[in-house]
Image (cartoon, rainbow, N blue to C red; front, side, top):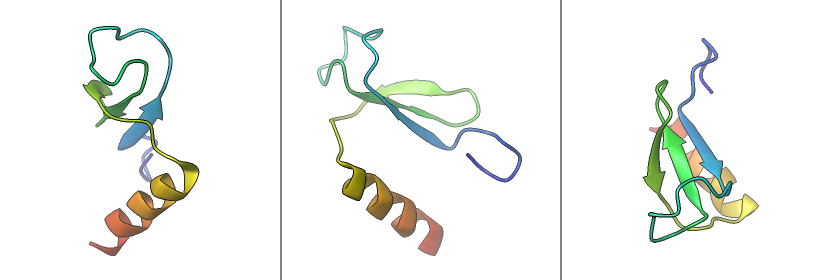
Length: 56
């Protein structure tokens, strides 16, 4: 979430997008939380993604 409490990225494994090839894993992007297929990530990978995003 950003400083205004809007979603930037949110990883999810709830079983509500069975059409995704990475089911049940996916993520939501942006303030509209648009879902997209995304493979399972570890906690460490998530932290690295956040760190890389903040550095840009």
